[in-house]
Image 1: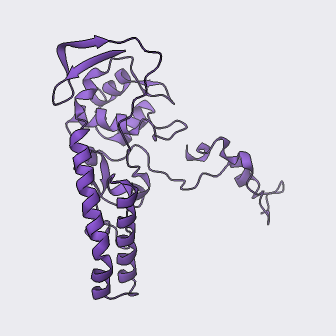
Image 2: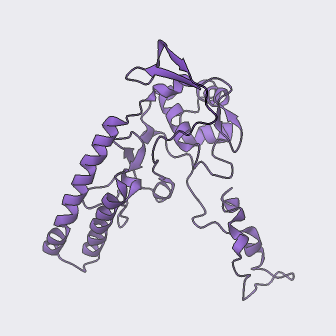
Image 3: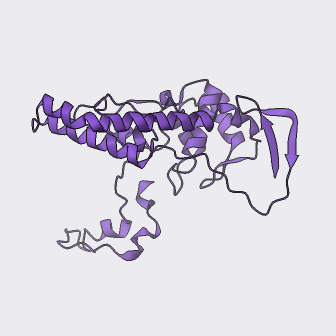
Length: 256
């Protein structure tokens, strides 16, 4: 394994390489918000100021840009479970206020401690982000044969060709021209890498290039369960086949 010294943009510095013999290497860049469902609902996205990933845009009450839709937790920015719980409480209070169940005074009073908790955990997230910053220079590490999407075996050369030669400068276009995100994981594994590559080459913020996967099937359903809804004569079956333990064997089969 080769270890390299990097500059502030994460581009390798000349003469800074060191080779270490290892049996295996485990690498993690942290959590990546999965914004497919909010994007499907039409919620605007923005850039997480800490980690640089696309996240759902919300106001101080966790309300999205879609009326009646509130968001909390990692989709609005990674701040940990406790911070996400504080956001969830604020979203619940705001939803109750929107429905007329509580008045404005109650909204403010009951949300005070949750707002303080949210601010505290956001400060923690900013501190962690400063320690573990991930600039876009990592794209320069890739070679043409680097596999970007393992499900569909799409290489970096294929993605770069789509961006430069086919003018695929948003994630939907890249998906259609390269098949990135069309495999079993539906972009859950490669989505962050593809987003970083497209944003880097297109010189566009991640929030402006869409989402690689917007789940049209919110709850995966095995095809045999759909088929069981119609009998051999074409009429409806009143009692569809119940879920089976092995329904999870191919959990995303209906996503494609």
